[in-house]
Amino acid sequence: MLPVEADSFEAVGYLAGTRQLVIKFQRPPTLCFENVPRFRFDGLMDAPRKDAYFDTFIKNHFLHKEVTLPSPA
Image (cartoon, rainbow, N blue to C red):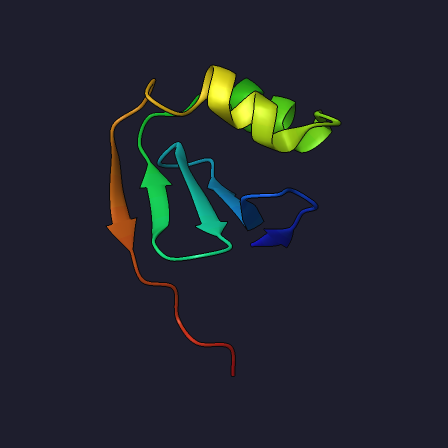
């Protein structure tokens, strides 16, 4: 997970092998988005306004589920 500066979420991770995008929001839940192309993850990371990019290109475009991240050791 990579920390990001955004109003609604604080960290983003991407699993290229399974095309899963994981977003840890400021408030629960943490969501895992399925079948997200790599260019969408790259676009999110490069976007100056990550919340706007998420709302436009990811939210409501991919199936997602709640996940629990492991606690940091």
